[in-house]
Image 1: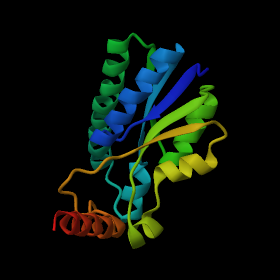
Image 2: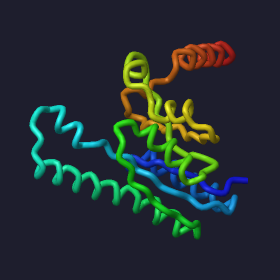
Image 3: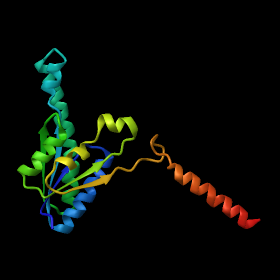
Length: 178
């Protein structure tokens, strides 16, 4: 079915769960995987701030590459433990979705597996989602795993309809008993 799966990672726990599921799928299909982490172009960011210090750029770049290596090490470790062939890529682009789609095309991937974080309200309108942008720009299938929120997350509130149906069920139980 799938021969080459691209798996973007930002190092988050949600991303790691998607990578684990993607590696399971790759093993079932006999596919290889490529992990990718996209770093921003710090030269542009530092130059935009007005003062370009080469030493500062090198230190920021070094730190970002070390972080990327640790994120991609998880992909390699997960793939190796499942016996799935794995490559990794560190890309530099101010738009991660562009780098993800370009890498998928350049490497001949036939599926992208990534996580999707749901944002509520105005935040979703302003920030959007890298996963949504990948989904709209990719010419290959994109499998998204929705990030699960912890029970104490501020956005984790039961839907209003759940409260209403629960109170109706409780009142019907009370009326049955009496």
